[in-house]
Every structure is written in C-alpha cells, then in structure tokens.
Image (cartoon, rainbow over the protein chains, first blue to last red):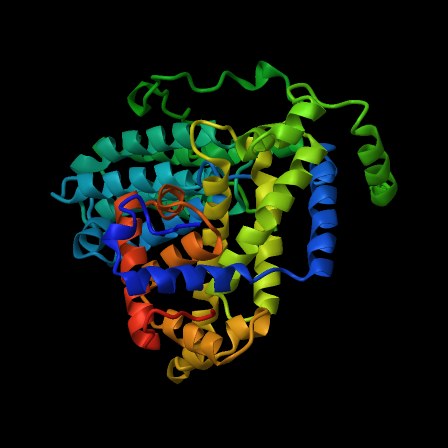
Length: 254
Length: 214
C-alpha cells in the first residue's frame, strides 16, 4: 500500500519512497502474541456483556465539577483573596470604610463557589463577622453605625436560618461568643445604640434557638411562632420585652 | 450485598445473545458484510458479535501503534488491553456522526499512550534519557537485528509529532485524513510530518534507497 499521500510518487524523493515502503513492511510485522490476542478477546467480550447487562458500571463522565473540585477551587480562591493586599485590607475593614463593600463582595463570591455542605458554615461565619464588626464599632465608639450593622446582622441571620436544616457546631459556638460580648456592651452603650445592640443579640441567638428546637423536638407544632417572613428586616423587628432581657446564648453541645 | 455469579451469568448471556438481539442491532448477514462504522453502531447497540469483529479488526493496528510508541512488549500489551477496556466502556456513548470509528478508537489509544509516556517520564531520572534511544523496545516485541535497533534509535530521535504521524500511518495503517482526525491536525500537516519523519529517518539511518528491512 502506498502511504505517501495524495501528492503521490512525484512529491517524494525516490529514496524516501523506497525507504517508506520498507519501513511500513517492517512495522507491519509487529503483531501481538496469539495467546495474548485470544485472551484479550475473551476479556473484551466478557466486559462488553457484563456492561450491557449492568453488572459493571461504565466510568462516569465528569459533566460538572464535583464536590472535591469545588472544594479545591474554593480553597485556592480563598487563599488568593486572603494573600492579596486588597483582600487583606478589605478583611479588616468596618462599615463606613472605603474597602468594606469589597469585603462583602469577597464573602459573596466565597459563598457562591463553596460546596453546598459548607454554605451553612460560611453563612454562620458571615453572621459572626457582622457581630464582630458590631463589637469593633462599639469599642471604637462609632455608635452611629450600630443600627446599620444591626440590620446587616438580622439579614445574615435570616440567610443562615434558611440554610440551618443541618447547622454546624462551629456556627453555634461562634455565635455564643459574640452574644456574650454584645450583652456586656449593652450596659455601656448610649441610649440610641441600645436598640441596635438588642436587635443584633436577638438575631444572633435565633439560629441557635432554631437548632435547639430542631434537635429537641423535631415534630414541634407550628405554635412555636411563625418564622421570620421574607422582607422582614431588622428595623421591622419588635425589640425584646423589657422583662425578658437579652436572650441568652445557646450553649454549645459538647 | 450478595454477589451474582458472574461467570455463569456471562455464559448464559452470551448463549442468549443470539435469541434476544437488542433493538437496533443489524441482521447477522449484514454484520458479516459491514464496515467498521456499521459494526461500531451494532456494538453500541449491544451486539456481542459486532464487538468481537471490531476487536479482530482493530487489535493489530492498535497494538502496532502502541508498540511503536512504548518501550517493551509488556507495556504494549498492557496499554492495548487498557485501550480496549476504554473502548468497550465508551461504546454505549458512541454515535456515528460522520467521524470514522477507527479515528475515535485511535484517539482513545493516543490518549492512553500520552498518559503512559507522561507517567514514565515523571518516574525517570533526569540523566537517563539515553535509554529511550538505546532501549530494546521494538526488537524485544517481535523484530530482531541491527537494522531494527537502528530504526529504534532513529525513531526515538524524531519529534513527538513525527513519531505519532509515523506510528499512525505506517504501523496502524491509517490514511493521512484518519491520522489527522486522531491527532487533531490537518491532513496536509500530517503528510508534512510523515514526509519529514521519513526524510529524517533515512538520513539518520544512512539509507541509500534501502530500508530497515528488505
């Protein structure tokens, strides 16, 4: 057989053509061992039948990124963000700072690319971050911004409550620490900041309460009170009754 | 979970294959006359005989292609087996859409060879490159003689693309168009690679119109 292409004999030097023909003859002598060939034939047919009858599952094609891939991507991006100068500066920013919107955007990206199993914990981290900001603002005496952050706390709590079908232990523990600090701050805050702090404490304790209720009474009837409705922001929430005082943080399960 | 008796089941399944040929499988007389693409469609629809005939048709070319690209008979046999496992596993997804089945199958073979070569390189000491030239790959497979050793050395000195084009066209027997589909290149490029590979080989082997085997 002439393997020299459609250009034919004229495109090749005569010596090359003769060489090519000999080369082809040589390589065609490479044949698998007869025993190997028969054995492999049997294996191929067996495998085909086994696969056709569903005894062996063909390897699945990866059509979308798996949980591990997303986890790796998430970790890489998180490291990249944290390692960047802007990321580091934004992470330290507080409401009212120029880089604060960047910080919120990073949090959102992190949430969007995280595996579903990690989202509840990331939402809890975001809520914890808002409470952290609240504490920082209070320590810095920036009381005028407390109300705005309290609303952000309430929104983060609502988001977390929607994902709390299986809350992580980390979430409960983190929120407990923040609530304790906020309760201490209530006594020292000026009057106009009191409502915001109370609101934030209530929001921070809600997920824990929801989890306790879920664990203790999975078939609890709806008389426990309606869940927060969409659109009910922190400003629309009723402040806690005076005789109840700030709600206590849930104790982390040991 | 209780295991099913695989061998018993397979024997029965093979015996029953004649009786309950899957829908879409071509009649046996037609299968005997069918080309590779038609066989592939029948095989994708579950025909055991079509798979057997595909194997008979392709095992030689695929083995030769693999054997030219690897070092030893064991590697060639292992890789050929892996290629057929992958072909069988991918058969249910095969749809004939104008692309020859042989090109599809050789693409699987090519990927397996590339993975193998990459793995081998990653385990090789840096100063061991001469073994790729001095190794006894081809002659250990089925050929003997000084000419073959020279050919082996000379092929190893070609570029990867030239080796690939040479293996696909001269060992596997593909046309330039088929080889181009496997390599993801144009047919003209493959012809050029083959042309240069032959010229280089002949020059290196100092052939004067002769060849590696007469």
